[in-house]
Image 1 (cartoon, rainbow, N blue to C red):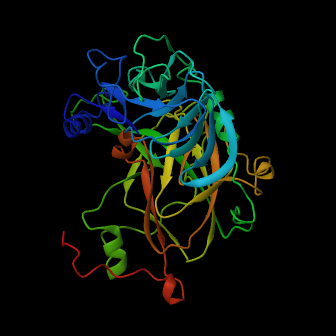
Image 2 (image 1 turned 45 degrees about the horizontal axis):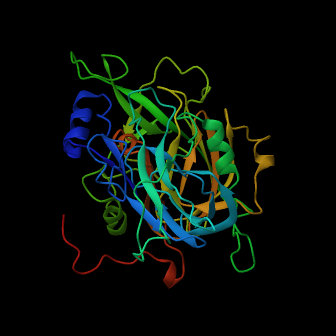
Length: 413
């Protein structure tokens, strides 16, 4: 499990950022299973070690629980065979390096050397980012892959004096590597594990995702992109405002007035050159708006990244559903040319997908889970700035297609 470590109180870190309108202080280290490892000062004793035997195959279940960073991961001298992403099998592919965003999981098979290698191996994770320098933790976390020494009298002994080999990770902003990697992921699409991708679409949506600004308070100064603005983030130029009443409660009780409005825009109200020169006005609106879907609707959603405040990758996570990634590319989405290149045969199925920096990704899903479901960027700082929205899926006709009532012992807010 990859994580991030701050020496400061994380609640204080984000609170300060929201007060000043600037970016939060970056983390002080990454961790593997809670341990920062030997590449940070004074932490060599806190190193995750994976102890293995020759000639065996191990499954590694990898989770990125970091708050704000997508991560490359590689083990020196050991290719990894990916068999599963986000708890769904894929056609196995063997790679030297994986990319995993916050909120994603990846299961890989690690086959050890056939005989004792006389070396130990670094397992390294380091960030992928196209953001401005200083806005993310540009450090590397290391764990160690160790082989049992068959020459030792102890049955599980490890030689501490062996050479340590390092893998080579991609450059921090290697977007082409990321695109090639994600483009290789394919569903099994077998009779036992079919890819049930919707062929027909009932509702189409086009959402821009990216950063923006809010003006400072009157006569105030901020630490945003300029001294009179604060950082913000939005979907279709709507920066989400959390209500004081739970969305699901308001929907279930039929008391949505004053809590949310059901008119989230299906496309940007003012189209622009999304990945080109940003518009002069980068201010975003605030709102608590939802998309309402009938039960069982087949949905296609194109998520378009923007270049406002810099082109960044945004790992978008949808609650309540898996979806199929039917297309992705760079630049502005072209509804004619790009639609024709969709993969409707074996697209990868997952619940978190990276919107490429200065690019787009298209997903499809069936709205067969009644309730209110968040969709948000999995970079925690962008969530704090408002890069989220919610889908409201109405009840179906059958008893098993209806939202269950809250449990009798649900605590009152």
